[in-house]
Image 1 (cartoon, rainbow, N blue to C red):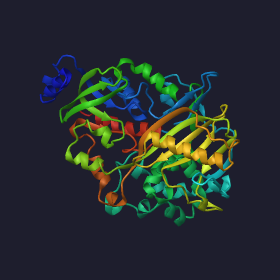
Image 2: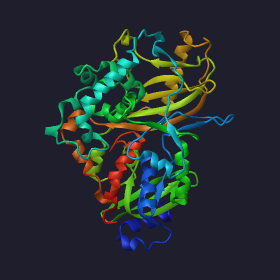
Image 3: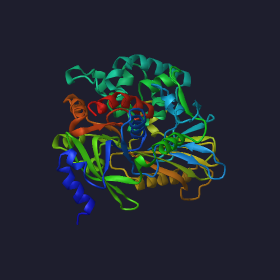
Image 4: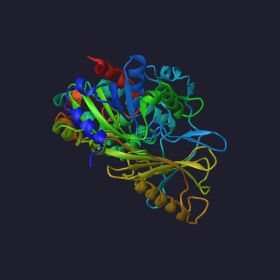
Length: 475
């Protein structure tokens, strides 16, 4: 049975926008934003506070910030960011923190940890001879020189991505082949261990998608050409808590879109709070989608056949992050997962996903950060089960301080959801990104987030800066 609010929305969606605006009980906004992560929260602030547009921000969680994931120790108040760990200082990013009185400082990694390379599938120690840090940084500098001519094609978005006949061949070959072609193999370990592992077996992914996982600004940061920073207190969540205070009642928490109608003259949505069941109709002149365009996420958005056909071509990694609290881990250690075949110095051999990337000491008591990289279908339960299986293997093979079976004690766990969107090389050659960007602005809808840009928070802000003028045109 349809609820009264659903009936009202369905009727209103069929009417001209001026008539729909007369419906009682609906929120009327210039722009409605779906998703309160980095891209959506930033856009909501800019649109409302700086361009004087009314907004509604729909967020499925009860906080803003998406995958920031700041852990707070209840005893000491100490924080640890087990999701996003640092911010790239691009395009005035620090100024955005300043406006919310969130002080920041230069990022410094935790104390040097002892890295033990282990094949988590077998428990065998991997005698891997990692290149010296100097050799790795030299390779990253050379890597940056090679990739610099392609930067505007891919970042902060695909606005300038070349037509199929003009795509550089190097962007479409496997990343391992690319690194070998240019003699950059020494840079692979640091690329992989920082952000490159998000795509799974980095060597097999097309170079353009590896560059979206680790690209120009990460290379500049590692070679000292670009700063990294974090809040000086409160963890990375501090910024998004301040944004939440600023936006106030314009955020609908614990809410998702139930159904929608999108036209060239505006959009109408029914939003449901999954805690209270309350339905809220929203009438808006523009829609900004700031979540990954997966089938589940877009199913309430009455996609057109062309939208559906285009977005369905994406595949994703499912990424999970958490903290475990087990005293059997050796503090000051990182247990890093590599296949046995990586020994002695094969820098381009990595585990296939789904896989636990590492157990890494955080500096807080016995807390270890866990990263799990899943495939397209991996679930949170499967990620936890895989972590438990690998933990059992480490116990049984003597890498931890006790051989006794025990359960992983999860202090925190977060699903980062489908991310690192990519398509096949054949789709790229067939003009996929030209088709994707044709969706921008169609049916009063604009798109932001990793699939349309890149999975770095401040780079998403930079992408938004180019997108917002397009959203505002004629508004």
